[in-house]
Length: 174
Ligand SMILES: Nc1nc2c(ncn2[C@@H]2O[C@H](COP(=O)(O)OP(=O)(O)OP(=O)(O)O)[C@@H](O)[C@H]2O)c(=O)[nH]1
Image (cartoon, rainbow, N blue to C red; front, side):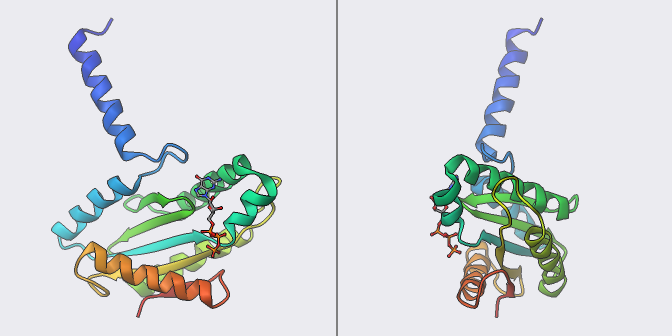
């Protein structure tokens, strides 16, 4: 039997976990991602972010329904996790938008990882949905910016370029 104090500690732990977690996929949410990135920048650790966005995801929802759309988001989460290493951070920061943070990796090294992920997604059959593709924008700290907003802005631009140039591609920020 847990004493009152221990139950309270468990509840606090659960609340903390919930505040940091995306409920659909169980990975880090936007808020938690920011805490990790602040820590990396505070420690002056080089890192690269992959901003990952599903191509034509609206069509998946429109064709198969929102629940199947949610399953697609979970399937993509598993694929990103299968590529990620121990120190990497996997987060969902918006509807169909994910981030993989790779510490101690420059943009060229991260590009190879992005391509591995992109090809894994392209060739993975998702139950009843079929195949999806992703576009990836890549930017590094401190190569492309000296704060989180700058690095994200660069990754956003690279992702936009990928979308504008045919989708299903990885693009490094300039
Ligand atoms: N199933 C599901 N869909 C979501 C969720 N959050 C956002 N969406 C959907 O994601 C879709 C995003 O569509 P758009 O921003 O038009 O992008 P897109 O169709 O992927 O097109 P491109 O990104 O340009 O390739 C919309 O249909 C949203 O309703 C969610 O949690 N679950």
